[in-house]
Image 1 (spheres, rainbow, N blue to C red):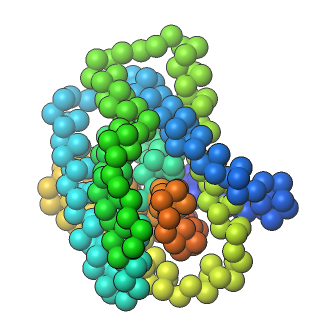
Image 2 (image 1 turned 90 degrees about the vertical axis):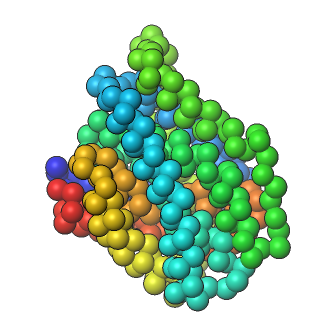
Length: 308
């Protein structure tokens, strides 16, 4: 495992965020464009990325292994809100922000940057395992996530079936079916889907950069309560996850993917959903910025100490 590759990947993602920030400050992009780009990523790029992960697999795992990873993913996502609540209490956040902190702890950046980072660390075999986590993520983010993000917030967002069965969720279910049936499309179609899917990472980071550009960097770094949250989420929580999962998971790849999913920085869905449904999108964007910056160091360290 080449740790320099992992570090370079994290730096590249952070630089892409900087591109979005700079383009907004230069008035080449605006919030109206950001909103449309947001929809494109959610409805086109992410589903294509998910489908491509299943269409390009050449080495398949047993059904027992797949179901085992699915069970671990479900348990992980249902357990993380408990830790998120404890982190919010430790950080003594405002009542109307408790739900957002729990959401940010639970729903890390599994989809937007999870795939390229997993691939860099564990190789192509990890992509479908990450897709399974992403399937659980997409189902829960529009159900459990809506409940969590509205905790303590007067503005309640109703849960709709159309949100649960979002394009990303449908794509995850289709990808699971493709994997189980070993289905393949003609190369020209697979390549087209893959090209659209490859837009996910750069565009998602640009969206975050534009969102951050609406406020000064001084405000980003002066929000002191983000720092204890970042320490607990990016360092303490992944270490706890490793020691807990290590007792039950024997497969190194499954263990590695599970721990790194927890170690990912705050998910961009925190920004996308607060932009869409109302909420403190500035806090969400600051948290994405700081945790992504810190993850350039913490993810390689966690891999080196526990997963190498």
